[in-house]
Image (cartoon, rainbow, N blue to C red; front, side, top):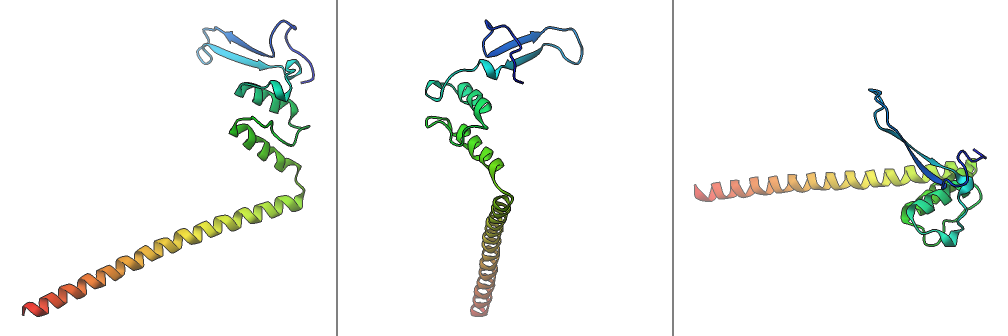
Length: 138
């Protein structure tokens, strides 16, 4: 929305409770964030809440997160960056991710097969040793 809902005296984040006796919505509460009222610049951001509201307000205009942003904010900027990619970039990213997943699966499968081969070798070795011991005792 491009307008304020509440009077200027109400902060950019406001909490509202609706105490009802409605069976389905008891003690329902709302949080309103009025982005137009949020006027902190990057240097003034301190809390996670500040960083999230800044992201919501400026996501279309900024490509990089603020330097001191928490990790989840940096990750959100990385995810948002994908929306600016061309079709070719999306396709390339998807192919790369699929190749990485295929490689991880191949490694996992190889490890499992290697473990199974090792177990089989151990079984044969044990069986061989048991037969050898049995032949010696006769």
